[in-house]
Image (cartoon, rainbow, N blue to C red; front, side, top):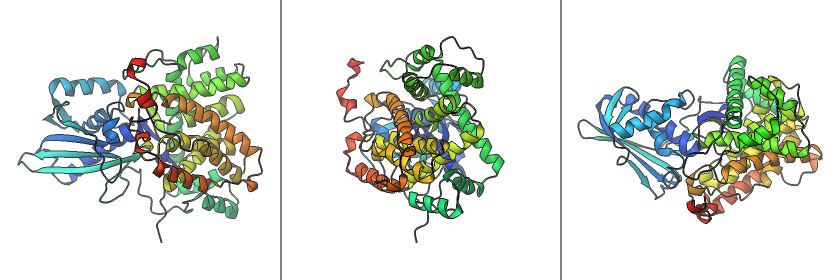
Length: 477
């Protein structure tokens, strides 16, 4: 019998640095893992020089996604969760100017940024996002390793196919879930709602205090990214000259409200006028703000990816500022538990990688996560939660990934706003429906998404070789 993959919500909701979980966070984690391997093999001190090879989608859109920079930061010993991001640009400039790399912060070696990072457009068979690290030792021998970034910051090695950066090795959850029907069965037999089932699984691998602390960290990063995005003017990096829009959108909505902290900011938003048009604008502002931070190599939460990091926080912020002014950490925790579980169902049954499935695998999944989580907060049954997630994904099926200039900006930023609006609408439709009469089960839409992904032309899978990526020219921008 096939072992059920156990995925924690904290594997679906990870703190990282933008702009891409598969093209930035994944390579960063792969570089860290390779350093660990070299140390385990007792050859770290013998390294004379290294080369980095990026393949397939990592090569085609790697520069726009900062894949090369992410590899170097990982090799330099920095962690995406804790790194002081003000050191990012100076670190890369030092490497370029001195032609040296401080490997893991312990050993300085010669390194040419221009000559020792190779972009290979050919695809490796195992996965579109392949990379190879090679170390030449002082005795002339070489040590190399291939890694694959499979979406959401997850990385694997072909020879083991083990996920290298899951936070813990989970042998068994008390509730083994691979499909939505199994999740629903547990809810019925245990007389629990979805968040309660998920919480029991999380309690099997960490304490209640640890769960709360990690959820608080996730929410704090989400809130901080929204706050920064809403209070930062200017143009996004990368050459497209995309103007940040969240700042002006926020200024027009917030009016003359004053505040000095994140909590005061939330209360100020609650005091503003919120008719239908304002709600649309607020939700869009929340989502766009996060993804503008992501596009500028800021810190965000993969939900389930960096490119789709704005949808889930935008919908949760909608609930806190529009639907329930008395909401507390209890509701935030409940939302995260459900969102993380819905995301894991898509990862198990399909993919959360745009390089494998197009943007339906990122924005579509994030919208499904947010729709299900919001539905439970609004009093929906487990059946309605799954129905809302299905509705959200159903109307993202076939969505392509075609980033202009390989940057996570056009159309990615706006797509997060659209995904958030669809999530709220899907929740409302599910809440007004008899879910027992739903014609399309969530498991079927997950299967359909995967079949659609396999049928989709590769030029629409994060290669910037089709769609808007070829119809929109840099001269147009």
